[in-house]
Length: 184
Image 1 (cartoon, helix red, strand yellow):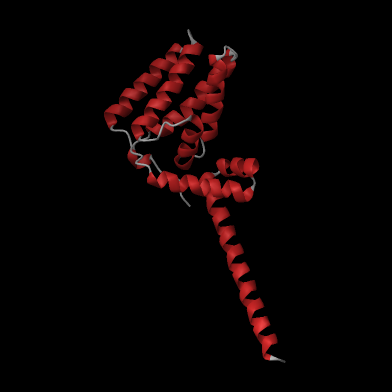
Image 2 (cartoon, rainbow, N blue to C red):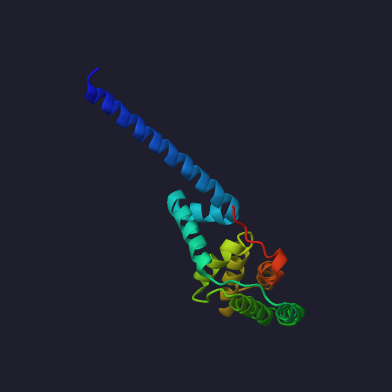
């Protein structure tokens, strides 16, 4: 067999091994992101496709690493917990106002913890890294809050928004030893 044939075979083997390593690496990355983000992974991939969705999630993780997210001190945690109880109690008499207050409380807690407050989509993306299991609740509650501002939310919609806000609120208030980032 001529030398050029051996070289061609060697190049082919190197390319094949490179493709195999790249494929295994992509599978590991996909598995890690799916494990880390849970339902948020499925949402991102279904919206943008696998490659773009995974790239977006990886970019969120990199952005999150640059943020100084901190736990609340015990006094702040207590103050916010009391404010939530008051807001929740007001729901019976004024569900529209209570839902607005719940939205503001979540934003206040996020701000104090160090999350940037640029716009809603960025807040949701940032919080999805630390709280992927409840970020969809946050999106749903926010959508209802927008409908509430237009006078288009039913009392049941507002009740569900309060439940959704509470899910994120509880996670945001967790003390440091329970404030676990879900990384693969």
